[in-house]
Image (cartoon, one colour):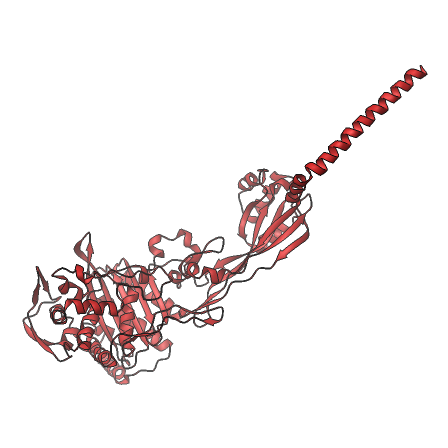
Length: 568
């Protein structure tokens, strides 16, 4: 019996020895051979790298008013692998954050994922309330939400930034690199319940740079309101207004109608988001006569007093072109041709100038290429090369048809005349990160003498020509009306673009303003539809900028006339 017991003890000891050897071998194998892979797995389960988003730079207007800012928010996320009770966590999270608990549960119950967003950029107060619940597996980090405090104001210029705070349109996209800054990061160790217990390494974030624009929020908002009123009044398809300082090229307002709330960009129609002032092209009509007349004056082909005997129609190749309003054959000076907006007279001057020379001047004025604004998807327009002109092109292009321009190109051309013949590059950005942004160097387009002659004739347009509705009591005004028929599928249709481009005060221009109304109904003429909007916008801007009147006698005359009941 004793011998049999000893054998059993020895067998048991041998069994324990074999089991211990196997266990030791397995442990050695796991530690030495498979150790690195398990170490990596453990690290993945307990060490997490968190991105620390950088604060996006603020966009200010010229007065320091914020147009685009960052608002603090809290992003709520989860690691489903560490959520102990997904159903209860989903109910609590949904109730606190205002989410559908079923949607939250589907995210939390998927344990194949180690990271899911429960709500990006949540309300920080609600997120803090949820954080106090200390639900295992649910985490929080601060994030910034892009806000446009003035909603529709300058929305076409600003564009918008998406959920990830990356610019998607407008200046937000064009200046994304400067505004975005650089994100930071933290490597965090978590316990089995997903709670952070230590920070291994960290790299601080670097905030984006602030941007200061040339826009003035008051002039911008006023322009948008007036355009919206004009679109409503005339049943128009849309409208554009640009207010520019001809002395510097700084854009004080760049407005379009319809507009949209940049805070709700996802629900805005593509047509409402389109920045018509720089992306859309149109046949300008009579406002384009600035090129024909200025070129002829500069080349000394005519003077303001040069006269022509003009029939009511003119035949150019296979086309007969009429005046906008019927009149008999009569003698007209260049000055009168401009202020009465004679098509026949302008074509007669263009024929004397010549097609090749006119094409050169079109290029010199900047048509057919971007103005230099360049950051908003600017179109170069559509200019036919002179070697592709037909016989009748010399009859259409001089009066602003058969050529397509942007509103920005057109106001830039008038600004050059108002700045004694020197074109300053239009620009929207004044400073980035405190450093001044310099636009392209200025370029002389015509001589000071020619510019002065054009300004004198443009004043006649407002005093006794087609632009009398643009007159502003107390100020001299120079400008030109435009009424252009639209083409569709290669044929002109009964749709029009009404416009007015002007300079105030005419004696020493501080503002160049363009107003363009697309497809007005009930009236089509630039002098009727667009000129009154120009007048009201210019009057507000002059008073807001405290520009002193340069013709106080006209204000007194207007007041006397109103008292006599002759003006309504």
